[in-house]
Image (tube, rainbow, N blue to C red; front, side, top):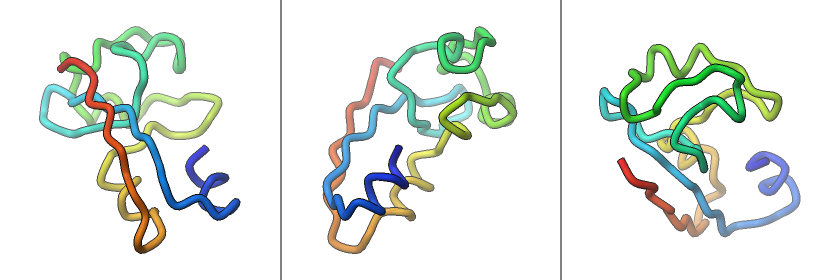
Length: 84
């Protein structure tokens, strides 16, 4: 979704995020991975090494740092830090 927004010229983004057990902030609206991947993991109780192996129809689960790196210069990012 973010790539499509960038391609369409958007420069303001909202990013819902949870922190994994080992401290990696990832993009997710849900507190588990079940709805998007079909595999149940509580994000805050799971390491990034496990999360990054999961697949979802929309593409890979993205880290916050990768989302920031992909944003056009001068973009605005609103973080929605979910409970961790």
